[in-house]
Image (cartoon, rainbow, N blue to C red; front, side):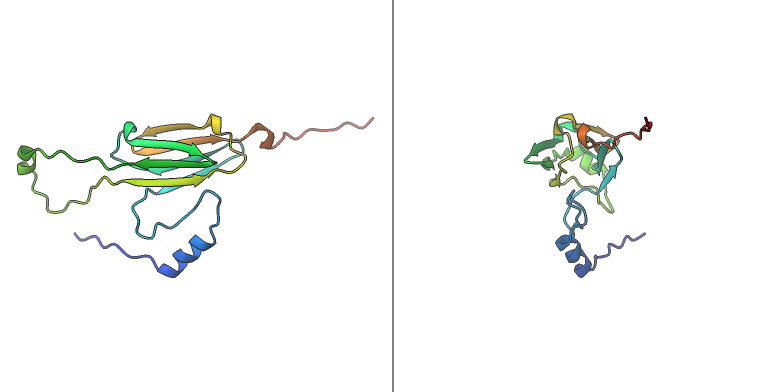
Length: 145
């Protein structure tokens, strides 16, 4: 079985970088090693999910500075055990841990102090609550006097 990796067309990717459609910093990775992301929004919060399997919680460095949420991982040096390596005869080896840094510009309506993060089953998730004053108000009826 052969896996073919196709290259993205450069011109549309360049346009996406110039005319970024969202304030979270949507970008095509142009071949860089960054984890894919899902961004979800509802009335009360945003949710960011990054697919980063194979890491431990302590590998991640997560910071917020000047309305930018930054997630980074430094590649760990692998300790090779010669006895284990002798038994493993790879015909293909594609699993790789890599260093990355990914930043997200937070919108003004995010309550930074309420941000929560979790890491489960290879998915790093963030819940970013919206500020109360920016939440939509409930519909109400006004009676005539």
